[in-house]
Image (cartoon, rainbow, N blue to C red):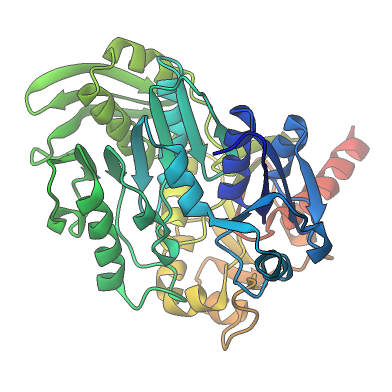
Length: 443
């Protein structure tokens, strides 16, 4: 690493890329980058840090740049192509992250679901106790040169996480996703087991996941959950409209009583993982309990707004398991309110591969609306539509369009949950504008 060089991020608004850019910036390196012009939820952090963001243009390439290549872009991207022609240094996102975590106690959080929330929770808790650098997949990153811990989200897509050799790994679950890359669940398992075998000190894995129970590694694997067969166990769980509380045991050794102001069974499990790794790093568990109390969540994970008598939740959920967890959390916090799900399917291949599971999860809401499928740069069309998914949903399944959000105005004193990994927020903003105007007129 050279603090005289300029590190240029191709795709700097990406959720991991923006986090990585902020870490480098915090550590005194010169950072800039490029991306699409459309506003993204990761953008504000870059703006506040004073990091220059350009529109994609091959003319941005100049002598002396070190290029950080985003995972979403192929070698044919105009900027990357130009950089190669000029002989510039090009480093992949995983390679750069791997360099940055050297010299710290590194903790990688992997999982088909839940890794962003768990990484955010772990980063929040450890940062309150010791200097901690962290990279969270919601566009949040912090670099501390004197850090004790380096906490990062380990993304399984295209096996990017096999570039890392962490001290500890947290594994929240193994599920089939990314059907545009993985050939099946065995392929996903193989990727996770590769990471397990590269972990240096210990692995903390969810005990109810049958695939995680099959993982083989050269370091101890500790399972967390709510069963007697788990090494770290949550007992006497109480879930209320204020959050959850529970006792934690390592085998039969009591590790204290904990309260969390967040919702859903998955967040109890996430907290258990954080407590487990902290216990092995000899972190004061009373301090852990204190820090858990002040966690506010991460971006685009159960983010709430209130307009008039309506509660609006924005969530990144784009897989059936994530949809189920989000609706479970909403039921816990709002047990007496009607839940309306607005879901934007993300990619054609995922919609086809998991269609029946999507229908089952979405039917946990009281009413379901769908938007058109969000395509990606890798996948612009497919032989499936939102109407196909809607036909399998018994709690509605009507398609709403951006220019007509009015069906959502039929509800009062209810909860509307906007879910998706694409640009579902534009539907949310359109609804909020309609709702605000309506509330203003009524006042």
